[in-house]
Length: 211
Image (cartoon, rainbow, N blue to C red; front, side, top):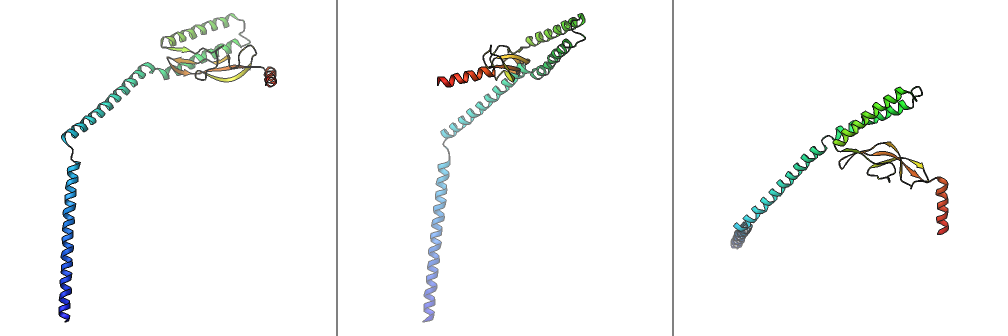
């Protein structure tokens, strides 16, 4: 009796194993079939490959054109503003000439002497020659006196009480500023007008009364 039961159990296990093997083969075939279908779907048609190639060429040409434009701009800037750093340093010569002239004019021993007049004349000639050379190279001074303060061109260093000028008007130039074509070489250092303290208080009181 036991032998027959063992035989039946063994047959059942073999049948179960055969079923599992069959299922695995079917699944493998299904996976293989699905993979083949995906490969067929991912493969581009000749028309699609041509469009992809056209798109790639268009992007390449666009990048080349951008690089060419950048190169042209850099070349133009180098030509137009190649002397920018040199010009900025050269402004120190003008500053030193101006300081020398002021120092000589304030020297008590030289005041009202012919020697001082001759020295100042020579300094003015050198100063004007340098400004002329700058102008030939498109470097010109910035207008400041009696102009309205422009933060792009001027740098306010102090305020001066002046009731004859509109507040914010430049009334003093401490250091002359310069432009190189459309580029700021250095800003003008200036003093701007403001209303006198008493006048400001009176105007504030009037405004409060009017309100």
